[in-house]
Image (tube, rainbow, N blue to C red; front, side):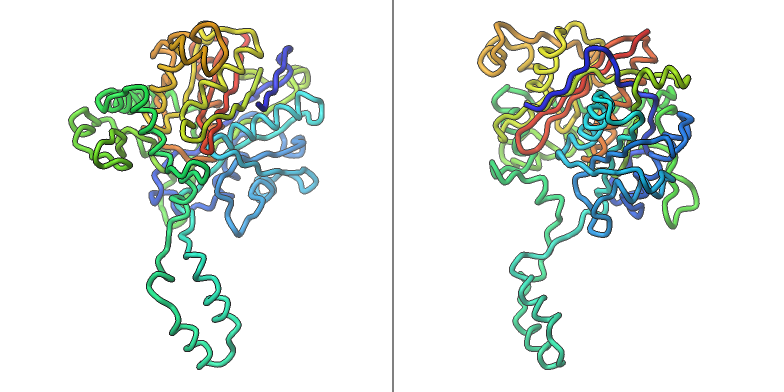
Length: 435
C-alpha cells in the first residue's frame, strides 16, 4: 500500500481549472498534450493570482507520453511561463496519474520541500499513435540502412500485408498483460460475479448523462472550465462534448455488448468515453496561503493506493477507500460526497455492492462488517466519465477539483475521490473543506 496522511490540514488547495472534455477525434484532436497542459497550468495561476515565479515544483500525470515531449510536464510548465529553474516531473499510474500528481505534490508540500506546487493531469487520446507489428522493425531498419535503390527494392519485396497492419496503441494500453484481459472484460467479470444486470448498468449511465447535463445547464461547471483554442478552428472549445441531454433508456438498450458479444452486458453506452482533456490544481503550504491572503478552496488530508487481483481491478476504489478511512479514523457515513470514476457502470455498481457486503469486507478488507451503504445522492453528483469522458491521465485531477468545488457549493466538509487503476490497483484521496 502507498499512503500519505496529514493530521493538521497543512496542504491547501488554492484553486484549479480544467479544459472541456471532448471526444477523441473531436474538436481538440489537433491540440498537443503539452498545449492542453499549458492551458490549465497558466489559467490556474491566473485565477488564483499566483505569480509563476513563486511556484516551486510542477507535477503532471500522463499515461501515453508523446515521443516529441518525453517529459511533458517540463515542456508545458516552461510554456506556461514558469521559470526555467523550477523542476517539473511527469508521473504515470495509469488511470490514477492525475491524482498521483496531486498526491506527490501534496506530499512535497506537507513535508516542507515545497511551498507552492502545481499538479495537473492531461491526456490527448486523439494522438495515441498507431503501431506497426514488432516484426516490421527489422525490415524497416534494413530499409533505412540501404543506400542503393535496388537494395531498397529488395527489402520492400520482403514486406507482407501483416507487416503493415497497424494496431492502435490505446487498444494495447487497455489490455492488461498480467491477466490478459482488455479493461472492458474485467467489467464483465464484475457484472457476472455481483449479478449486475444490463438494465442496472444502463440506468446508471443514464443518470450520469442527466447529472452532467444538469450541472452544465445550471452553470456548475463554469468555475472549473477554461476555453481551449484549437488549430484550424475559428471558435474556441468551451464546453464538454460528451453529455447527452436527450439520452434515453431506449437508446441505451439498443446498443450491443462490445467485449462479450454472446453473453455480455457492457456496451459503449454504459462505459466511459474516450476523450481528450486536462485539469490542474495549485497546492500550497496552508500557513503560507493564509499569510499571503490566498483563498483556500480545501485541504488534501489523505491519499492511498491499494493493489489487488488485476482481473478485479474495478474494485480498486473499495480497497483504497478502506485504507483512507482507516488512516483518518472516519467511517463511510462521515463522508459528504464521493467520486468513483465511471470507467464502467458495472465497475462502479460492483464497488457499491462490495462496500455494503459484510462478507466481502470481512474476507477482502479484514473488517468485521461492511463499510456501509453509499447513498446515490452523495455519489458522482455532477455525473462522471460515462457522460464526460475519461482522458486517462487527466481524470484523477478532474474529480478532485470537481469534488472540492462541489463541497464549497454545498457548504459540506469531507469528500473522497477514487479511481480503479488498470493492472489491479485503486487510488483514493480524502479532501476537506473547513467552513
